[in-house]
Image (tube, rainbow, N blue to C red; front, side, top):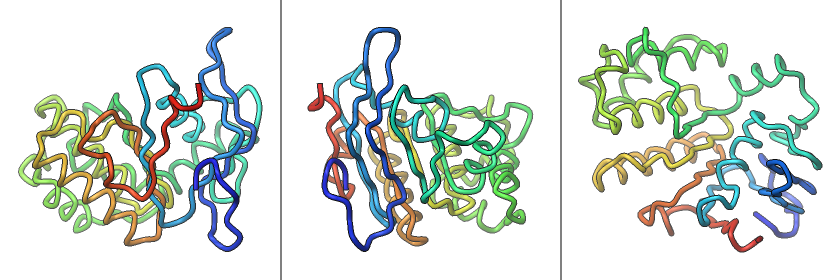
Length: 224
């Protein structure tokens, strides 16, 4: 649970203590405490510039905090080397960023299979095909990213984040380029896929369609 008492029994997938981060003299993240347990989901909301995406990047280990610790699955990622972080992310996290980072030379199927390889899991073609089918983009499996619409590419990134059944999925505006039908489809898949393996889901969003769809809501604007 965010900004609350620590759970006595629930395993914490995310556990933040006294975390701060600044851009120059402007402090954008200042969290005394933030936890998210296994099998829980949360929407991180707030106005532009309040630090939502920065928090997601800190949780992914892409930014180093000024102070404090971030424990993911009991491991303090702020103390890891770059190589350790790369391996930890590949094995335990699934990520959907606003910039989707699809490999342009690889097909959709190959882009998703790459996440399985980074997680050091065998390639599971049936799982990839099932995710693409659930997201309504099975027909683009052999297309290169440059042939996709923004909405299709966003759904490919969601499939890539889920394919290796990570313990933590971090998603930054995963429904922003999707119409109502596909936004509902994508959010349902994110929720159902993480719940099926007891994983945690954190979604940074401005999208009103996401409001009320996850277990918890955390307003970062309320901290400023």
